[in-house]
Image (tube, rainbow, N blue to C red):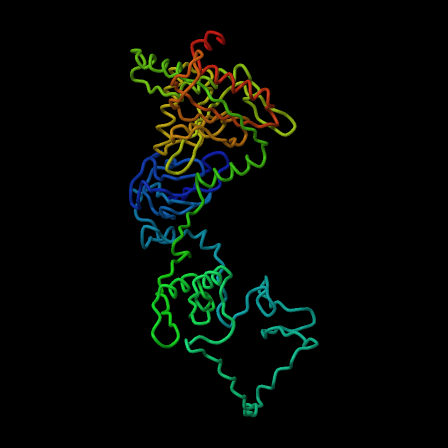
Length: 484
């Protein structure tokens, strides 16, 4: 058995087909242990560290950092028995650098072009399987290139042996020189757009006296304005100097091209598929959340909650989970000829990261207490921002919340994640004038935006679901007493 084992890029879940190598955690010559992280790879969903399948010594690294590798392609070679002595040259080649030559298997797949003067195997005149010469039936072997019969209309080529008699070309009369006016411009129609002509007329400028700086010598607005502001000489026609060659560039030198890959590529594919597959409907509800914010303040003051991150998003998540209990159809998936209603809620929380938007989810969030839910949300956000979210944490979501309020946005019309039937946008909490107990008072107000799949959720169900979320945020204590 060979000591050198090539480690292929594994499928990290969800049928991923490729990954980008972000960083190598080892180098050629390092001794590694079993399950030691050796490389950090960014898939279409997350950045993950891949452990080694064998202990040994790194013999070769096949792909540099920043390269995209397909699943199943070798990325590293490991000597599983480095203490057995030097490796024979026939077993592996010594790399000239940190990026060694490819393996013998990969070199065998390379097709080598035939040398000049040789005929490729299998073609007429070349070597056929079995060593014989490939010929057509009734003809002997020929290495000459194939010729076609001349077609009608083809001009026969002159015999190469007979030299053509030189013929003196007939004299051609020189073309008359174009007429030039006193300003050095070729006589003819003046090229200028209608607005430029009107401007010249209003300013009393004769376009025929100007030298155009536009395309094909056309007169521009700047040419006319420059002529109007210039003082004409005492004698002779008006001469306008050509403008300086400081024209703004609008080409590729002032453009940036960003490759679409990784999280951005997956997000684009999912959003396009969802937007043009599920018929979206979005409803909005503005809610007075003053009581909810006061409840959060009281919660933070409790001894057992002083080390817990408590945010308005926590109450929104709790409101969504309670509303799902009252309207289970919202937590479902369209499956073509049937609707799958989930009895568990994997609550997704959209998170903006340096690599793009990701939506990790809290598994079976409906069974968590408020304290457990707060801890799970804190861990989820911290893991996402550090780029360590695993693919399993971003799969299987059933319903999502996107907190656009952290960006100072009132609300939005969110697009459904594929496979989900509802997503809630939570807007910024602002102090606004509000009618409270018959009087206009400053109150803390937010706007909710609920998008849902109209194939599953009709207007009545979507409205009741959104209303229940709003009722909880308006008075959490009363909602808990009424619903639990």
